[in-house]
Amino acid sequence: MVLCFLIVSLLAALFTGLSRNRCLAAVFAFLFYAAQLAFALWIVLRGRGETVLSFFTLDNLGAMFHLLTAVIAPVVYRQSLRYLDTEPVREFRIYSLALIGLCLSVTGVYYADNAAVTWIFLEATTLATAALVYHRRTARSLEATWKYLFVSSVGIAVAYLGILLLSTAVTGNEGLSYRQLLLAVPGANPLYMKVAFLLILTGYSCKMEVFPLYTVGVDANYAAPTPASALISTALVNAGFVAFFRIYRVMAVSEVYDWCRNVLILAGLLSLLAGAVYLRRTNNYKRFLSYSTVENLGIVLIGLGVGGIGVFAALFHLAVHSLLKAGMFLQIAQVGRFFGTYRMNRTGNYLNLYRIGGATVMMGLVGLLAFPPSGLFVSEFLIFREMIATRRWWLLTVFVLLMCLVVYTLCRRFAGLAFRPEAAGTTRPEAISRTATWLQIALMTAVMVAGIVQPRFLVDFINGMLM
Image 1 (cartoon, one colour):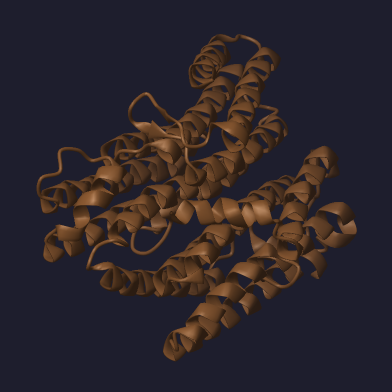
Image 2 (cartoon, one colour; image 1 turned 135 degrees about the horizontal axis):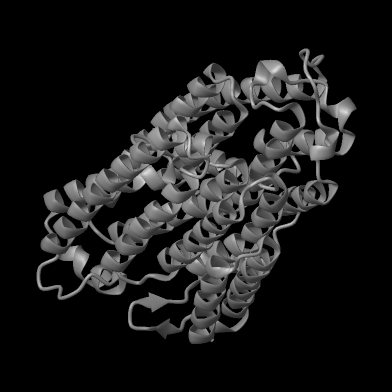
């Protein structure tokens, strides 16, 4: 099955790149997404636990995020067809290939069972994302592309230094597979382990969009076509998290685990603070949603830091966030097309001008606010409960204060989009795709269902990632 997926994917990518017809290129691209979804479903239903090609293990952690990517990616590409309807065929082919390249790269990250192989695929995501960021070929996109390449390459290099130091700390270990590291770290040098953890967290932060290198992801989302930003803020962020979480599990069996958790709480709070502050300062919807990603990933790091049920909550939070953020980015893509701008002070009255779209924004707002029945309510409640159980009162106080600031800003910004009288300008109702809107509603409905019902198989599936 794995070889079939690779062969179909490579052939689909090849014919997408060679097609001289826009429709034909789209057909081959959708063939790739169909193969990806079929492969993800096969792993979830039958293929978990299998080791393939020596360096990849099809486990629960990779399977969940792969399935999320396989669901989100075709929705992103479907909307891209409408969003890029005036693009020349050559530019459309490059965009399609970049999306396929990003999906293949993150899939490699999800299943890599070796720290060095994970690093290689994360570097591949940098190249695919850079092609998406540079798509518009403007001075702004060129600047964002070079910044993304430079900062991401430096970040990945820093992470690799951490991986090398980790391998040095583990005496007698002959490889960098995560299973070998798990067996060897209990006797490792604590100082080396601490420095390695800091380097890896700092390096991978450019992919996870957390403190300190979160700004490069915000700039990439701002410059890339908005549908592509939906994939960058979900699949790529998830890939960075998976790469880091595998290191986190290695550290969990070492004597520096408590120290690592304190570092994660600090990094999470700084990410949450940065997201809360810049949410108030930005006047662009794409940057706004990007800083929302920074804020939510800060919550994920805090969940890992508090430990206990907080680790389960972090994984659940990230899964639900992926569906929600993809739906919101895709709806904002329609807002930009409808009003001809992403500037917040030039939009308004969206709920009356396009009722289904306005209702979708309000649905997404409830989700981002973590109000019931949002799935984010469940994860944040579990993190709150773990803070109280471990008597981290100072952390709970700071967390609640920052979340109040986030809630206020989200309500103010999106309520303005829905109800504020629009600024003088021309709207383009013909730019709206009702089919795309219903797909966004489907993604957000899944988020709401997850907040009401958490099936036993889903709970067991996530718990399987913690073993």
